[in-house]
Length: 145
Image (tube, rainbow, N blue to C red; front, side, top):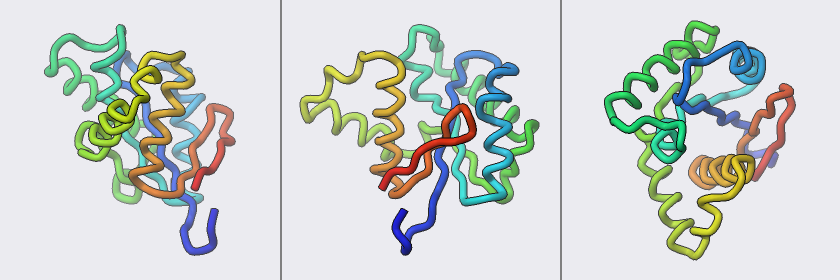
């Protein structure tokens, strides 16, 4: 990280299923800890639920699931008074950046392995927000400029 820009955590989960113990141990528990250590942004990546086979066929289902996942974040200890929570679809730049990547010849990256898709989506977030710390499931993570 550069001295003039502090670290910022950006992380989120898809609302395609009810959150479970793995979500708690792999992400939420770390989010609760990290929000006291550095600035964080947590989101429900609802746009991904529309593109996955496990996604929802109806927009109302995605909206309901998005609210349920956001409520689970708060129930797990994420404090919305200090840590912004948002739905990915509410940030216009997410869809703009995704479209831009595809239009520039990267459409072939739109259907790779899930891990690569995740890295592409995290890169989108970095393009939108600047330097980030992207948490890993083990509580570690990596930073990008």
